[in-house]
Length: 179
Image (cartoon, rainbow, N blue to C red; front, side, top):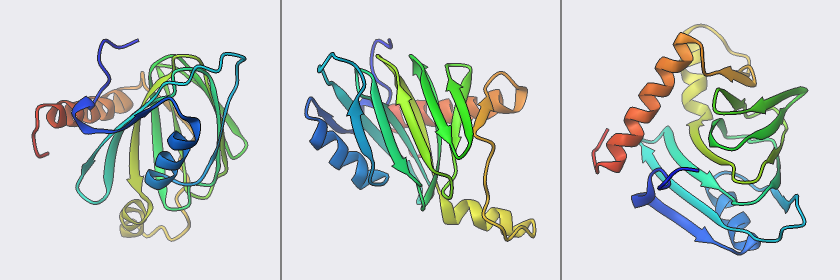
């Protein structure tokens, strides 16, 4: 696990109460079912978040113990989920992603999502507003809903370059910058 959670100066919530956690995450993202997967009832959730302009929000999220999270569809946003520690099994539509530090999962607004985060799973979540993504797609003449591949291989040169930019943005936010 990391010595200090990312974006800790941008704490949204830290709680040991499952209902409080679910309510806060629903406010920031969307309604969802949240249920511990293990017999271990310890629950230690932290959510930090920093917005970059109106379209992108960087998030750090952990629940401590294993959790099943079922949002159905995201509707208004895309979410790239990058494990920093631990693993997750993420089903997006009919695709299943066994997500690790080298494999992110990508949720698109129209696809149902169902995930299991393992014990100690910590994720960097990059929230992208749906309308912003669709505006860019329309510039290329694409009018259909944009659905990304559910798996992002973080070892490809393009994904590594993208992740470096994300970490640069995180570091800038940590330093109190205004990217």
